[in-house]
Image: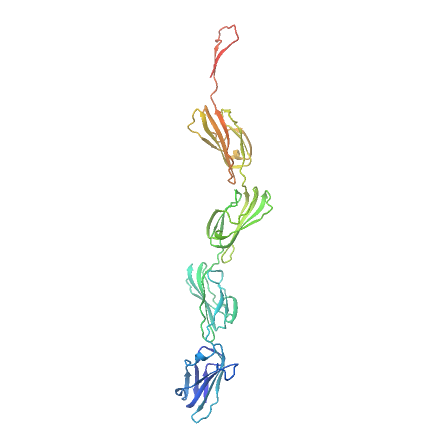
Length: 448
């Protein structure tokens, strides 16, 4: 008798090796690989004549080197062993059914994460071209923060080894403990039932990132006045998206508010962004008061904590001021000034500049206004808190300029030809002479 021992029924093989047993010496024997679903005459059926040296009683291993390339990859075969002893007696055939011949490597396709991506968990997605007997995902740290457990291997669960698509797969036991800020190569490895190893599928530069981005909103500040829509902020990492939102809350009505200004291009870069006008900067209304909020999300999709500046006044209108006294070509014995302001100012100066008369070596005298002197409205003629020491007998031109809380500068107003005179006049009477009688009413005098 004869008996085919291996391969076992119902398994997959990637070579044509057959193990069989003969209980006596045989005169001849054959091994046939019969492809299921085809006629007996089909050329895809393969018949191998066993050599004389493999016909002796005992166990034998048939090498596949001479015929394996004739077997149909992916075909389902019945292996049948036939033979006859030296007396010509035909042995009962021995068969092994449902043997799949498979020399095609399995593949992981459509894998995610992909190259140069950010992830917040070790979950993976992929599709398999065939069932696997075993599968592993390997996370190997190649950059960023050090991962002293690298490489970390995730054994795929049995339900994730079948042909087809698998989403959000994570090992049920001992999932990888990745390090925040580490950069990995993610490799997908598998073996099918025939022992074929998968083709290499991997994703490069995958960053594991579970820390939300931080946005420092540096300008505008709460309660500030601004002449334009420039903003200043710092991003702790590169951003995927971001937005600055301007919401009207008070002042001159802005019927088009709220204004959303999405960040784009270089505005999404990591680091400092100082006083930049965004590409999508809104058109604000002068005199309107806004609440300004910035928020963003990083490349892995995590959102930042919103940062807000409240009661931000937009003002791009220059202040107006007028000097009410002194007037052109007038005389003063005190450096008093009267003026009108269209709005409160952040700073203002009155400048006395020598023009003629007694020379003033300290000219020009710049006098900064302070406190109530900067309030909007009318300011009557008075000495300023920081009044200057002018030169008696000098002639000055007076200038005044101011800047409002938003940084808008006024036009410079001026008054020319102001004579500064602090010396009292003198008058000498030469006639009549004191204590001397006179007959007329005339006088003789000299003025200084």
